[in-house]
Every structure is written in structure tokens, then in C-alpha cells.
Image: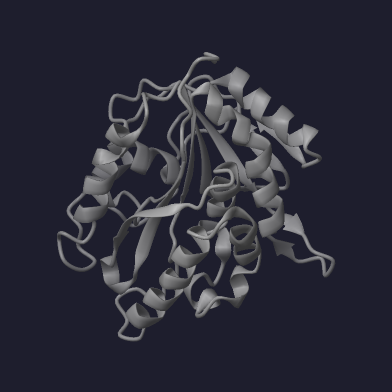
Length: 278
């Protein structure tokens, strides 16, 4: 990685519903995901320079340790169902970056976090669906990084926000080497609540709280995000939090400055937002 690379931001982005940007949408108005797609299409132009590599924390990959893919040529993982046949023939042949993946695991391990590598992991749809829009040329090396599904003292699987915040701090130095860190998830993710009358006001209230948390200075931001369960309608917005937890990595890797909301929309009757940390 070039030592003189311009510092890259960290970004939490919504990856939409399945392969929504590459099909005629039928669950609601046909233009449901148009604004999100337009946001993603313009994202690369806002970066200080083309990234040397991209590290993506996906809400669709869970392991018993933070795990980075060392696959040199990752295949696409079509981990969605019930969509048109052509969406299972999408291509996005971005190369992997095995050396960077091993470095990611090393940085996490040095920080005292459980970490490892996976030689065969490809790009799930939380990675290839949005990045096919952002970087259609598929030339920049990409490393996939999993969430850490740990066990609490009650022996229940959980995504510990504090551990994911710690992971972001451990990886922050990569930004100065031209590595773009993307956290791919959804700021609202309750599949049963979409298109329901009660959803939008609740989703808006949670989104307002989340935006205020993200835009707070670092110490307060981490305190708010660690206690996200206390937010209004938190568990309504996220009955299971795997789509929110990537935000923790992006937020702490973002450093001391407050984050900022760079996009918001209300597809399928729910408020969603994207955030950036410079």
C-alpha cells in the first residue's frame, strides 16, 4: 500500500433489498430504490482519490471471530431468494487482496480481538450488490470482513457493539494507506415491518436518534452506539442487529471527528440513512 496515499473516509451505506438495483422492483413502487441507487452511483466521485483497496464489513457474514477473506478471486454468493432468475447471473469480478486480508487479521489480533482468515469466502450480496453500483469497473481489490458473533455470559449468541467499535479502532490506520473502509448494512432492518402503517413514524424516530448519535463527538458517539438498545424503537428497527453492527466498525475507524449523514430516504415505508466519517 502506498505510504503517500490520501486518507480515505469510512462509510456506512445501505445495500438495499436483495439485488434491488438490478431488477424491476415489484414490492411497492417501481422507483423504490432509485434514490439509493443514485446515491451509490455518485459515491466514488466524493472520495479524495480512487482507493488502493476496499475493506468491506458486511452484515451478511457472521463468524465466531473477525474473519477476513484471503480469496484472490472471490466468487459471488447469491445469498438471497425469490428474485428474478437474471439476478442470479450477475457478475462483478473484483479481485481479492490476500496480503491485505492477512494484515487485517493481524491488526485485529494485535488489538486482542479474535481474528482469522478464510481462503474461500466470496462476496455476499451485502458486498457485490452495492459495490457493483459504486465501482462498476470492478478493478479495485476488495477484502471481505465478517462480523464477530460472540457468546454472552448467558451463553447466547450476540454482536457486542464494544468489540466492533474496538475492531474499527484497530483498523483505522489502513485509511492512511488508501484503504476505503465500507460498512454495508441497513440503518433499519425489520423485514416484517416494511410497508406497514405503523412503521414509518417509528423508523423516523430511530433514524433521528441514530443520526444524532453518529454526529456526536467520538466519546459520546461510542457511548450512544454501545447502548443503541436504549434508543427509541431500537428493537423494532432491528429485531436482530446484524445490519446495524457494521456501523460500529465504521464509526470508530472514523476517528475523533463527528460523523455526518450523507444520504437518507424512506423506501418501503421505512427511514434509512448512510453515514460518513472523515
